[in-house]
Amino acid sequence: MEDQQGKVLASQELNKASLDETNAKRRKGFRCLLFECSTHPCSSLAQTHTHRYHQLPPQRCFTTIGILAVSAMSIEVWIDQVSSTHVDSIPSWLTLPDNDKENTFYLPRGNTKKRVRFSPPMDGTYQDAELTPRPAKKRRQNQPDLDPPEHFSSVSARSDDNTSELESHHSGRISPTKQLAFLEDSSEPVIYCDFATTTADVPGDVSTLCDAVQALADGVAILGFTPDELAGLTSPNTALDHRDRKRFGYAWANNCTERLQTGTMVPLKQVQGLVSSAIAHEDNRDHETVWNEDVHKTVIAAALTASMYAEHLGIANVKSASVDPPELAYQKLPKRVVDYAIVLRPSQPIQKAWEALQTVGNAGIKSWNHSTSNGVRSTPIASNIETKAPGKSWTDGKAQVAIWTAALFKRLALLKQPGQGRLDIPAMPLLISQGHDWHFFVVSQQSNPASKKRTTTIWQKIDIGNTRNCFDAYKLIAVLHRVMEWAFKVWRPWFHDLIRWMVVE
Image (cartoon, rainbow, N blue to C red; front, side, top):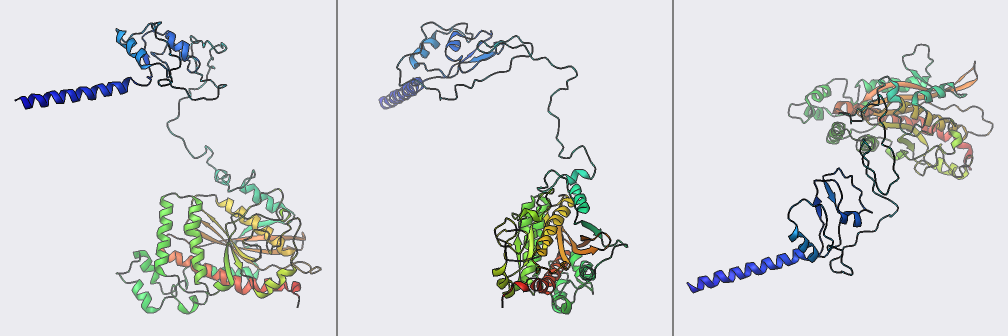
């Protein structure tokens, strides 16, 4: 019995000691006081010590007295004497202690020139004691309420075609439509012309290249699988989508002899991964940069790796390049760039001619192209590729390709031998992608005897495939192989002839 009483007493003593310790900790230091007032006059303590930090309207139901540097003992005495939560005044004996370093809190220093200001009520009843009195702002008649709208639309009220045209990629102050109009009216016109235009005189090399690409776009000879491989791909147990299985079985789609002349087949598993990635980026509404790196660049690189001419060609990223010297570009237009370029790797003739190559204008740096970017200085451009995310301005991409390619042709004209006369540039393939979808263009130059003008024509366009399914992705890869074959068999020999005069034997 005595043992139990002893345990109880010991427990009580322990609890009391713990409570005393807790209370001591609570009393130590300083407090932030909040006085709830039913009347509007601010307390004398608040006016004395926090007036410099906070100015509160008297209509507020409470007054915040900042953070006060008061001793714990003064607070405790004052709290014990408060009979209610309504405070009309502060006892005169509640003063701030001097030199109380242990319980004093110092406010952080700020910019003393800045002052927290509160907007006065609309009826003008509140006046700040330290601020210059000003009349209450009057509401203008017929002024609409400034309530936030229920939702914001990302689409302008203008719903015509010009809305998307103004959504340009570094297009400057001129819309892409006006950029194209300026190119058409310049002294050296750059125009777009449809393949179906009956009045147009299509050059022979343009027609040849377009006929070959159109066949691939129709799915002819885009596959190069053996009979056994094709049988496995079209069986019900294959991993292909049922639509792809049916299309892979088309008799005209598979032709090993013809297809393998330009490159080997990219593995099906790799193509399936590319398609899955592209669909995921579309579902996620990913930015153009993501599309470029994970889809557009990937399919170009895959095609180059499987190309028969991979050792002679390369892919250059020209997103950060600029037209240099600027005189090669139209001065009234932005210096537009594209995303990628198919380039020639320096052959022996190109390397020898590089030693004799002179700089152009004020650039001060050698370059075969119209840009002094390190990625394309010593590798002649054979084809340009512009890539965009889904929903981006189609007209904007056309303006970019036109300005960039026109500057390239001006640079090529400066590489000819002095006194040679006009330079005949062969047709150059161009590609523009918009998300999944890829399109083929051809640019050519011809002289107009009547106007004596040299016109650059961009022939449009053939839809050459997409990355929504494997069959159409193989279309795209087959076209890329054809373009790379053209770069090696047509553009490379022509460029060698162009710079032959520079080579010192």
